[in-house]
Image (tube, rainbow, N blue to C red; front, top):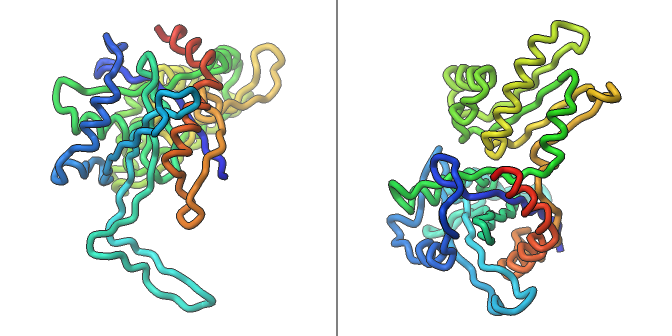
Length: 302
């Protein structure tokens, strides 16, 4: 058994409005599973994603698990070597083989999306959005917004002086995601202009005894980013601040302290990748465990 994190999001329309009806997950899985090969491999932002579907055998039974969609990041021509006691050889795949790194998704009531990534390089929530928009076509686009708990609003409201903002984005995340925060967007855009598609980590430090204007600007931009769901696309999003009541130093992590839970999942020992049957059961358990928090989050953003 291994530990994985399950995070929860809400699927919205392209205008970030709630969908008028429940997504038909059965039809979506059928579509993914039956795409012809020339459409099954979807490329975007220099990534190649391949989808597949899994239905548990006992889906009708309590604790029988939930249906899932797996999106695998496909890596062709891996630049890797295998080592055994200082003897090296290239990792050579068959002519029809590629490396595949999975992320697992399931859709629950009220269009809640559960996600379990296998690693930091596996597809993200943004990948699910891009993949679905590609295969569903125009006029059916979706957006993804994180379901955050009450601590999200409380942390921002309790900021007296912001002292640090740390944000990290992968090489495939476009700067336009940070449109609500002109400071962050402009920095990422300038770095990409000079360096190309690189991963970027920005750390903004603010002297709590200095001019408060800079802290207020960044604080305002962070609020806009959090409300827009932009942190969904980041690898890191953290703040350090002085609390408004105690004036003690505190921190808040927008990713790890959103609605998420650690869960045990059975993995293949040779690949360290979760088994679909175990993922199905673990996703169900995670949803049940956080059911009240999910419902509260849905009401708070409605």
